[in-house]
Image (cartoon, rainbow, N blue to C red; front, side, top):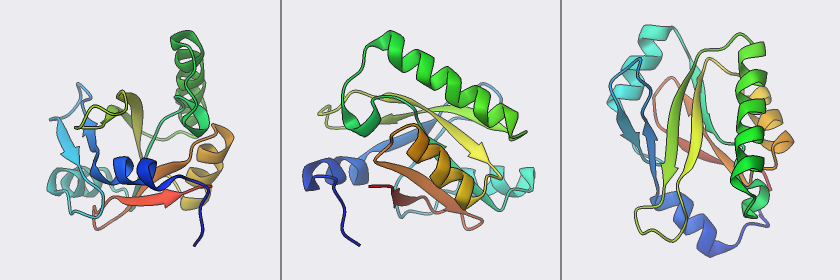
Length: 142
């Protein structure tokens, strides 16, 4: 698959920490292509066979103002709530500090189609997609 995402940005995505930090559960960190036991347990206990980790911040990795990002993230949160899906707060963090962390949502029991649709609607280069095995995969959207 060819992509418009620059290799350096893809490398940052692949090494980043994807932290779930919601008050309703124990915090945990996910990494791309690595099984995540706390995620597996959360999904199993929630009856979710799929999940995504998504943000509305900085569409196409183009910096936006904090106010623009907050509005977009709240719109994403409302759209997910409108689908009747459970979501937990999180943040995607580059451990090397090349990119600022971005607030994200871990959305449980979302379909692949809805994940792709939301990611594209909010201008994201990529999102994390998880199936019941609890292994986050990078889903490229460009």
